[in-house]
Image (cartoon, rainbow over the protein chains, first blue to last red):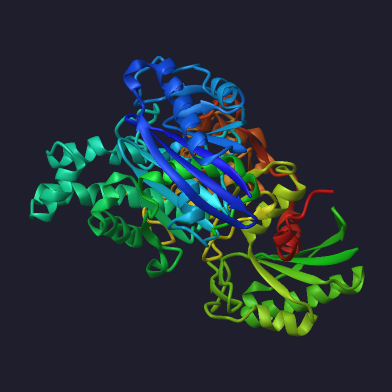
Length: 304
Length: 304
């Protein structure tokens, strides 16, 4: 029996999860949350990660590995941050792995937060038991992940799974990544709210439910672009299941149904009715659970 | 030591390859070719497959498995053909696996020809040694395949790897698959020749080399759409190497350079200079070699 800690660094909270692995069985034995203090800048945040990690270890006992989920891109070899689009910086070039390893005295594996989410949902959540799972997270941006036979695919540069950065309208709006017409540039929260003329994504769904035509149309437009991105992953990978996450999936079928409907219209090579688009199951702890799984994923952890 | 036969059904020829597998070593011990007689229709073609298979077995000795590469889509469970876009029919619903198994008295595995090509190149050809390989075949249409850790990914419906059917221009031209703006609909041979005002793809490259502006522009346009499709697979899978095949890659850098250049311009999340786009290495036998590998691929055959 071994224990493994996952830390999920978010803009407002650091979430934690401790997993217990016994043979083929993996179970979640504890979860928690602590403030990030992101406004304090990188050094304060790293100190918060260390304190939160130490507290979890003090509570649940020693761990063999630590996984750290981060909201952006990092250099896998160096253990440094390349881009945190939504955290006050300066983060570029900041060493994050070494100080954690020094303080916690265990190896630390970095993983992108959307990939951590994907690994968790594919292994212990809504994609459990499936060979190929494609995940999409709807938040400020559009994250993603591909999990095949229990392993999250990271690719040659450690950055695979960015299905939100597929180009689907080459002359489309500029994306934060520098390209034009990425799925993210056409579907992110800001685009949906601006199309609908509302302040928040939640408001868009609320007013659509109340019959507001502009909100309904905005949801349809965004769902169709997401469907095109997902249709492309179906052509490429034929996932057994597509898992949608992010706070807004709390709205359930109001979010999923339009995506599923447009996807079934967009797909030609496979039977539309067999396409599975489901909501994430693990809730806000998915990122921390996936971070804890990251160091183990080379052995393709199976669900308990 | 075991032997394995691959049959590659093409419009004009049936190609054969016999592989020898000894422990971790896989080698190609014989290849051949015989006319398809496609105009005779399905029953004649199936008889030709049986005769060609028997001849290869007579020459190289008994085999444990047969793989059959087919130029289209099939029903994996039933062993029947769904769509052969380029062979005189009627093929829809035609049983193809059973008559071969009955006549050759060994299990027969069906595989799409582009996936067979991909498996061969990733295992024994230009993608050898790479963890993740994305392959593209440029012919009448645009085929593809994804090979990860030695296994060609077939997905939930046995049809994954169709990277030519990614949608990259949703209001674009109608594709044979029924969608609009697939990579294939924007880049297939017929599109290139029509943009350039030439009769064959070879002529387009020849006149471009001779300075013809319209041919050059046509090549640039098509290369950029292919690059967008490949950029999307880089976002999703981060392949270590991209392998381009099809008869036209005989033209070498004239085909590869524009694709590579546009791809490097289109990619934002990974270092453009590290992207590898290379020509296939196994030549016309790749399909038959990949078909022979198909029944073995569950064990992820390694290169000798």
